[in-house]
Length: 457
Image (cartoon, rainbow, N blue to C red; front, side, top):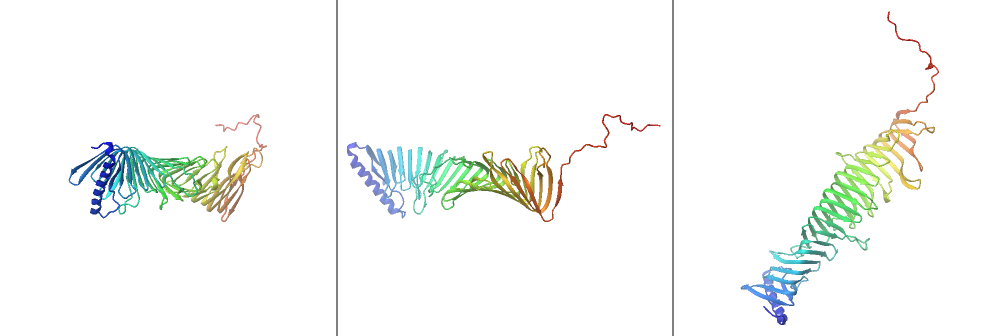
């Protein structure tokens, strides 16, 4: 035991002893990257205890500074207990710093186990990746520093439901917004690879996601995946709700540019509901511009207020978030706007059906209307033509052909069939509503009718 007045002498003595022990360790090992614990500073008091020949324990309190000799690895705390060459325990205002990581905690322990080393932080722990500024906060975080010959990148493990603020920087974003990720367990490799398991939530202003687990690699893989009960919702500018057993994420320049929902996939958008085995969303500048759906167990089925589409696969294009076209392949069927009186849709079918849309101004409101529909490969169409006179009934047309093209009339109030063109092996039927006329041969209902009942004899 020493007094504060002998602090400087004690500090030099402890440093010398630790350095000598570390030097001996260095001679025994060919790994130059191993930590040789060195006590650099202690303000109040310290104790050195030799428990066995060559085995020294050290205890110190008051603004303690310990480092790995000849390396940029520094540890600070209110007090420390160093046991031999393998364990250092830190208590109170614990801070760990190296070239890649900053970590603050209530308690910490540096461990050398076999050829490996790690810092086990507990209490109110905050881990910060100095390169990406991503952080992990939780009650316990274990940090494995890079060591040549053991691991090239740092590894971080956290449990007890930590919170991650995951920053993805790219050349187009000056002040990036982090993804706030919460899960039961977290593993981070370097600054690019993240793995989260157990009741995962991901939140940012432009999206919200939920799943059983998540992995994300913004490095060479440029990909990620939500696994198990996956759900991803877009933000206000491009509202969508995508679900599936899994959702695969693809990235371009560290930004999400596509997602694929698989197994019982469903997409609900502002104007669209779509079911299929698989649904893929393609994105540009964070906005969905193409939607693809396919499947055998659940054939794609899309429904909006103005049309309905089915097929073995569907492709919906919406550049700049404006619906421009829809293509249906394989036993394709597209139904147009529902008739308010009958509840039926005009429809067209074939091996391939294509629909073009146009934007119109409907009483001061921008809406999307069907401009043209085309079908080929055993095309069929059923449609109603507008009545020739106001208040009259529409005629009905059913046509079969190799190819059918339907041109729609589009104005502020109408979106109905205007012309139909059919090519090759054409047949069908056209039903024109009849006109009721008085029957001149019918007797006056008020006149006495003859008795036509057969009399028995």
